[in-house]
Amino acid sequence: MGVDVHGRDATKAARRAVSDAIRHSSLGFFRMVGKTPQDMLVDVTIGVPNPEAVDTAAVAKELPYGTVTVTAVKGGLEIPAEAGSDAIIIANAAVLVHLDDGK
Image: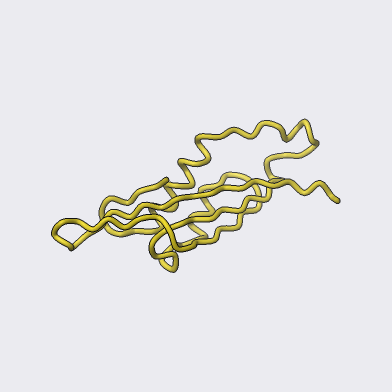
């Protein structure tokens, strides 16, 4: 989950969601299967209230390895401020990692 507290920046929330997701996981099996981190195929799905506002290329840069594909879909949350002039944007991220086994 990633949050932009001020500014309604869907890309900022999405980048934070991806950063949070990858920092709670570890993939150390590459050598066991004869692969490197660069061999990863990474599919990212971002759920935000305004998916058209997400800069998917900027979100992809949060992933340090592999070939990355980012798709933004309708989801997440937008919580309006009491004054109505701002909102909190919450993004959810699903990060799926695949390896091509050549079959």
